[in-house]
Length: 494
Picture 1: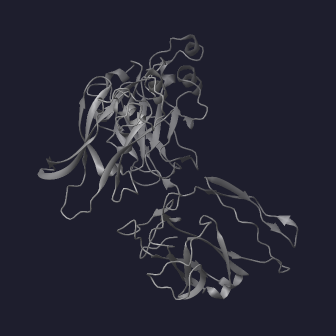
Picture 2: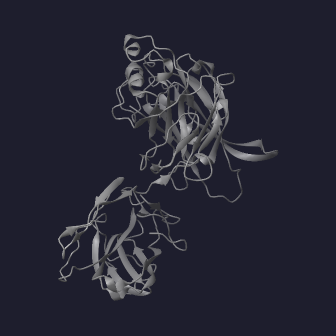
Picture 3: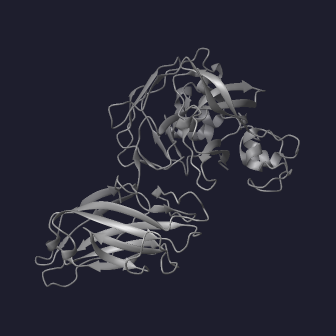
């Protein structure tokens, strides 16, 4: 449901706390207590010949009242009095706002060619917490006996490969099998949304009986990991290595937002050292990574490579990753750092020995004897337990509360002194699977993480487990900009 001139974007459209903005988030105006009474939408649909259909079924989700116009003529009015103005509210609120409402429209509603559909959605009141609009338009047909021959609609909530046949009633025969893949609001993988989050290019040689029962070659324990740093699923179709290993993702490979996919050289070897892959999205590749460093070139469907960089086994690259049992772990993968810069990689223990007991949140919480869950605050210092884990602070000591600091500093960037917002916080370098996201809001209601808005300005290592990180926002401070709020949100694997 798109249009560039009015409210636009993938449906559904709205704002609220129940997925109303799952497609496109809308603004409610300048005051949460006095929201816009009416929001307008418009899109176009091309119908070569409306007369081939029996009628059209328009399915709509709206909250609270709606009027729908096709080519300037009113087609639907629901829960809204006639001639309602832009400052009028709906007749009442809608109790089942997430349910589809069906309207049957005659074929004469539409013209052959391009048709414009305009919708006005009215709030129930200025203090209403949400607004919603979603729409489906379907032309319905008849069979040869003019009986209704329309099946119930299919609604996909996850990526689906649909296989279907058509039945010819006159001959009693089925058509050949056809199939189509529906990726459900996915994005093609590119240099903005896909990173290589880990590289284990020179594993330690096998030593345990379990490892030696599978292989005597340390290279069989190699692996790489990709991560989706977008907020929508990625379609990895066409993503392939053109330099380095030999691998191409199968068609219709989907990687959910924030998730990772593992490429292993040999599954049996990987599981003998690191554990079974049940529940992990993984694939095997051919070839092997160079122990001396090499160029990795990952191509996608477009002309611009997704990744093109060279890792190395020499300083300043972490030497522990060169046969010492550690892998290269990308720092702050959500910020999409330059992969060819050694400073953006950290050595991570991967030699088959148990991880540090407190490397995961569960282990850390157990060692500290925490009573509350990740979102609770055991020591009452206003930092939840999960944030204490990601900061590397003591969750049982209220005085050890390293709150983030925001400041405006004059910095030399691209040869010019300008004022920038900087954010400084402490980071637990040993946190396994933990991530701190920088989020921004203009209304303390809708928050968004955009890694392109920040760049790491400095990293001061406190000890082998913690560091102080300072992020600089990419755009300088400008007069007249709206007030914005910042927060750090923590996420962690169990």
